[in-house]
Image 1 (cartoon, rainbow, N blue to C red):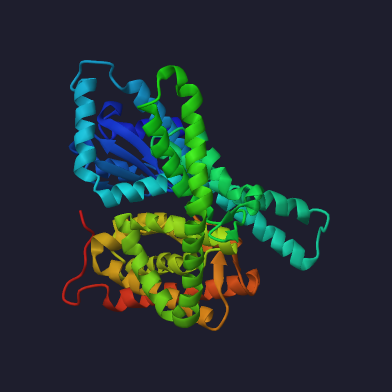
Image 2 (spheres, rainbow, N blue to C red):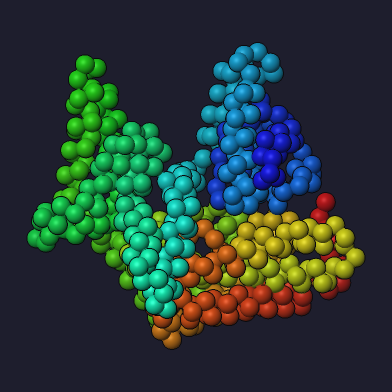
Length: 467
């Protein structure tokens, strides 16, 4: 599919009712999301049978097609191009006006305030993940070189390349926030830049000098939101002849001052509380915290609620250099892999299901769990619960070592499973972190397998593959 994204896009669109049936196109790290005017026109069986399709999830008018990291970006671009080119200018089964009304109706029907907030937060942070991954890998490589004493002339350059994006991430958050909420992106970036500007050290707020970066991505998010509100207020009141001059000025000035004399301090307090709470939780109740987080993450992914954790991960990475939550949550994928292996062993005569497991297992080992979730464990029922048990066990393993003083963190978000190894670090170095993480994965595999093998199937009847 990666080799020919155009053909893949054509094949996908043909099986969802054609370009005219698609009202919106979006994607995350692994999934292509298509909103369909007529969901009944989609043929899920044919979609699942396409080479490169790892899974299909239908949620009302939204059809989510799991393609995997990297591939989804290329295919999404082709789908967007073909949908734009194939959208009828008028007439046909549905006019442009009717289509717009139908799309708005679907949006109102499915967009609860909570879901809308999560989607918008994800739209701000998800585009930043590739840069976080790249810089995280470089930071890990640089740390290894420094510890080994190799290439001393190159490590300062690697440190600069790896750290520059994180130092200015607030600007990108401001840009994306304004774009997502209907403002001018560069004005959102301009206001958010106040957070990281070195000159803020000369500003006194609440009796203390501000520190550059205080408030981090949370402060940038709030600053850009305020800038968007101010800009919209100005657009409706400033005369057209003065709009080009006054609106940008007021949009930067008012939110900029509010950011300096309020938002940076408040967001800094929240960010510090998040970091303190995460460290305290792992130090005092790490095993329990890991058990809960590892056990509940698969349901969160299934419901799309895991997106609410993105700002927390980003805040921890910006504040401490790594997020201690991601390795715990990644254990859910290990439990899923163990459960899938147990299903493979138990259902020796179910050729179709075993074929699905063989094709989805490599992606599962690399942290892409949707194919195994939606293709194997969730349809069978009990194996989904036993997979959660495996994730809980792996999370408890990693959390237990945090209670002993060895924290495991990830320098970026996005990858999971084996793909997370290059991004691992911790308070005792990457080698210790990798060893603990590997132990957690093995625990998750083993418990997920054993729990599924022993308790994942009804005793009185043999489970069958759902139609």
